[in-house]
Length: 162
Image 1 (cartoon, rainbow, N blue to C red):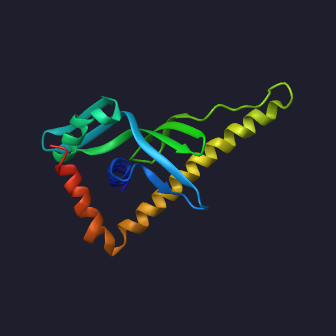
Image 2 (cartoon, rainbow, N blue to C red; image 1 turned 90 degrees about the horizontal axis):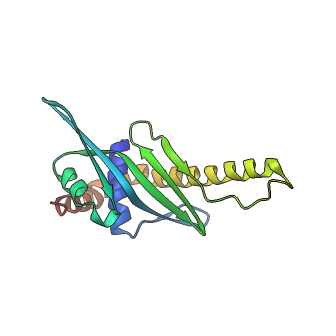
Image 3 (cartoon, rainbow, N blue to C red; image 1 turned 45 degrees about the horizontal axis):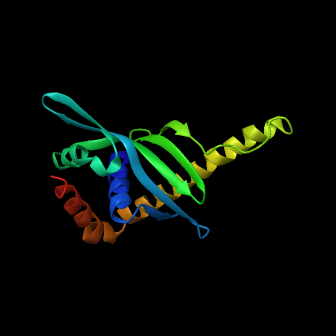
């Protein structure tokens, strides 16, 4: 399910300007940035393709999707309000790797523990946003709208990558 989620996330990031409702009248902007790893398994074994570069130049990665490769790792930028996070999301365990939060703007001298708690708060904010986005995906995936509208649109987007 994680691999399907990452493909859907990439599709939505490119077709819906990467805007996601995350509850509480908040919107997150998300886009793929930097590196995408795709894999497939067949009788010859596992094939892995790593594409790196600007998101707008990911033609090889889009082509790999059309050749039945699946996204297993993607570098993602997440923007909520004025805060921006960067992380790699692994499809197997839905792990966050290389997690970078916005800079903490507190004085270490006044409240040394405050810097730690602020950093934890920022990490929780991004993880909560991704939880909301994943929840939206699961609801859509289990609805009739998936087969009727979303999956055909996703398939068309993949085939346009050739």
